[in-house]
Image (cartoon, rainbow, N blue to C red; front, side, top):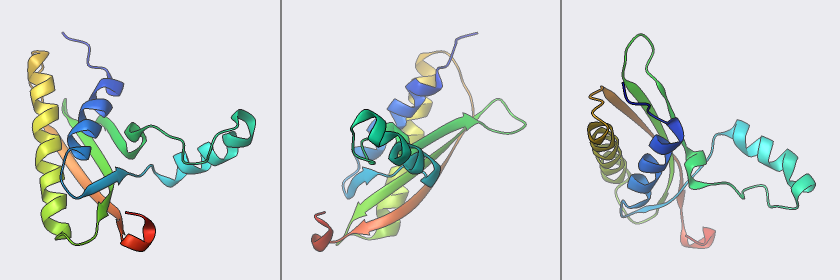
Length: 125
């Protein structure tokens, strides 16, 4: 059986999501943002100095041999949110399935997309 690294899946999913037109970034979950904020004075970094992978969560789907991928993204204004979210869903699913197939690991993949914010020009996005 091929070893599937969660960190590799995070990278594959993040790359696919960020390639979608209308996606301006990925946003980590609140718990990760709070941890980064608490650690920042200790390592002299900004609270949001996190990897794009931080906006992706990959875990084994409960009760199956498949994967559940959660994508938290920030979108640019001026586009239909539903269309961009659907595109993120489809591209992330295709990229992860393709990656797993390259490892000879045919597994079910579910993708959940959450739009956390729509950036406006005032936001700098």
